[in-house]
Amino acid sequence: MQTWIDQHSAALFPVLLVALWCVVTAAISHVGGWAILARQYRYSSEFMGEKWRMQSGRMRWLMSYNNCLTLGGNETGLYLSVLSLFRFQHPPLLIPWPEISVSRQRRFFFNYVRLTLGREVKIPLLLRPTIAERLRRAAGSHWPVEAVG
Image 1 (cartoon, helix red, strand yellow):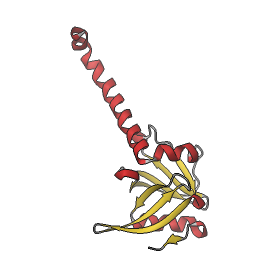
Image 2 (cartoon, rainbow, N blue to C red):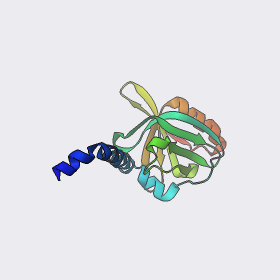
Image 3 (cartoon, rainbow, N blue to C red):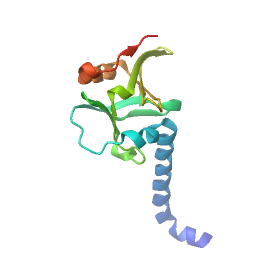
Image 4 (cartoon, rainbow, N blue to C red):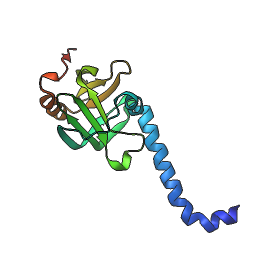
């Protein structure tokens, strides 16, 4: 067996690397809550609305999506997708505004806007106030009323 591995190690390395990449992206999706949201909010159409690429956000249990999110907003809801490289177990999502609650938070020295996604599952998405403001403008009057506190 060792001889076979030695002879085929050049071919095995890329296969193992891809497998590891898939395991890591799937784990992030499940731990962070994206996979749970995808069960209800998977979106397969072309999103019609404003979109901002290369954005960052943090979901459940500190799962960070740094500079790999595409966030979008229109009157229907919040659009979320990730760069193609990270798409395994991360299908695009469209979450209706009535299924989202909004609050402001301060962590350490930083201000965040917390979007709680889903009425039943309640997956947090922490965003910088600047991108949250863009989303608020894109949503117009459909933006959820912000919780005070």
